[in-house]
Length: 218
Ligand code: SAM
Image (cartoon, rainbow, N blue to C red):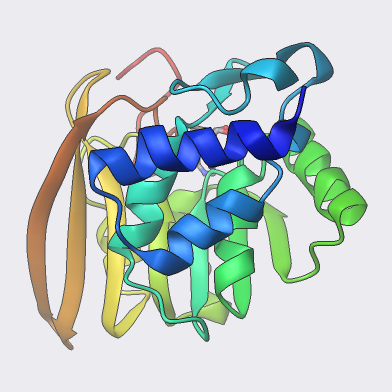
């Protein structure tokens, strides 16, 4: 299978055709080898328009959602970004091709280890992965220019809002059940935030102090 053709089709059919216009995001997703972030048997489906299992009951998000979340951060290239939910490492790899440094938190140690291995193998050096509860953010490294939460939360997590730099954006799926609304919060002042609803989406649950109690409680 020619993965570069599959990647081009993905960008044309699933991203551009659905309204993703951010050139940095489109060019990056044309380059990042998504098939290396899924196991061998699923590589031929890596550029398809749906999420895929990555083990431990978790998923790599659909390419369109990765593009939409990344584009919603309105990145220019020099930012420091926090991701909650490293999973396969693909979203972090997309961010890492655009920004200076990515901080990524994963609660599952096996997934964190697997993602670190893929970053090493693919020569990605500007992602730092920590095992822990992403609901608490990464205080010592804050403020961040952008924060992406790649698991569904019961409500906007205030701790994360306050780890944004002024002007920074938090992208977070919020909802009472398996379906959420993807929200974009912009910190416009010390205590001022603008909130916008982007699209309806479906993420696995954010499990932690300000998330759900366990993976089945959402
Ligand atoms: N961004 C990932 C990718 O590119 O493959 C997809 C992430 S997957 C949809 C959601 C991830 O969030 C899972 O790996 C899950 O273990 C993780 N997760 C759930 N709750 C978390 C929490 N409180 N802190 C950190 N990671 C969490």
